[in-house]
Length: 272
Image (cartoon, rainbow, N blue to C red; front, side, top):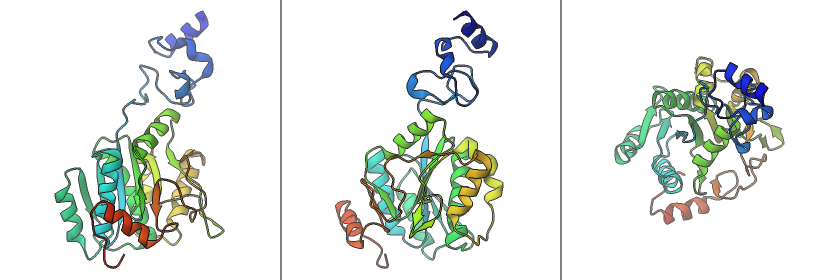
């Protein structure tokens, strides 16, 4: 134990976690406080210490379905409270409707693309905006969410942030198989550690993308984090398989979205 205390002191720590030295910290090789926090940098005095009350926000990819976006806002509010939400609009014709949503809900902000980027590049721009917005607003984590992927499970966002904090994860995601094609990542719902992803933002600024967004994001995960990720619990690898506590257009019918909208007493877009 004397050697343990000595090592802890040499590291500039207070000694409050010396008895945990043998388990090691996955970030610096130092200890982690509490067995459930193994792998996270959380010793007092560590500059990378993980906050127990991590701040998380939602970046919602949007295009021309503002009523669906409001349904998302209400669903997030009902399941996680008034956490910050960024509506990332890819220069849709209904840009004014998105601005109206932000004016209606105090915790919602809009960021519109100056020109239409399209499906691949537009989706990647949501990841970029999420990180920049999260950094500017002091968020620890941001969740990139597609407009047609709606969560109904209580505290799903805050639970994901806690999982990331507990494991020191740069990204919480799930692998993806789309009609027998390996797309590496289910881009419709991904949590990012803002601090760890911020240096990568300059690599995400392309206005043109000739391959699926999923492969572009996986390239960053492989290049910068060695392909390591924390799995999103319960999320199927098969994109077309229904997930409990969610409504998703690849696994649910239009009528199920309509029932959800009716439950919240909201309309859906006529062209949904």
